[in-house]
Amino acid sequence: MLRRDHTLKETQRLAQLIAKLLRLKNEQPLDAVKLYNDILLNEFSLTDKELHHLTNDEFGTLLHSKNYNADQLITFAQLLYHHITPFKNDKIAVTLANKALITFKKLELQHHIQSFDNLSMINHLHQYLKEHHV
View 1 (cartoon, rainbow, N blue to C red):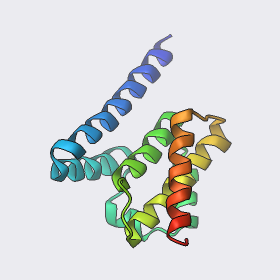
View 2 (view 1 turned 30 degrees about the vertical axis):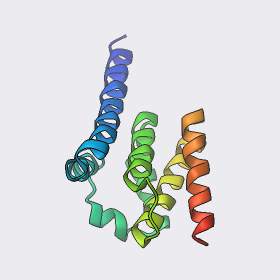
View 3 (view 1 turned 90 degrees about the vertical axis):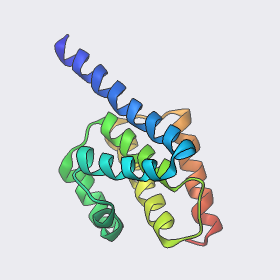
């Protein structure tokens, strides 16, 4: 029972971080970027610069080595997705779009989790990458 309570609290905490990021993105974009960087560092032990410099293969290896739970993978994928939307035509957005897709795929393969929200994000990411010939 304690483990389930802890998991539920952790899920709620991570969901609140994403909700706060989305709210700030609309109201205070600079604060949203700071929160994004804080989440990357505090939750995933990565800086934005480190994340951009990882190849897709290195990123996949990192996800595997960290053995993130399903909630962490959902948060990571959604964090990347929401950071780059609305989509821009730049290298950083393409890099993060690919990493978000890798994270969603890991979530599906390792934890067998899919949702309509995640599928919608995955479709948007594929469409964005297709439009930018990647």
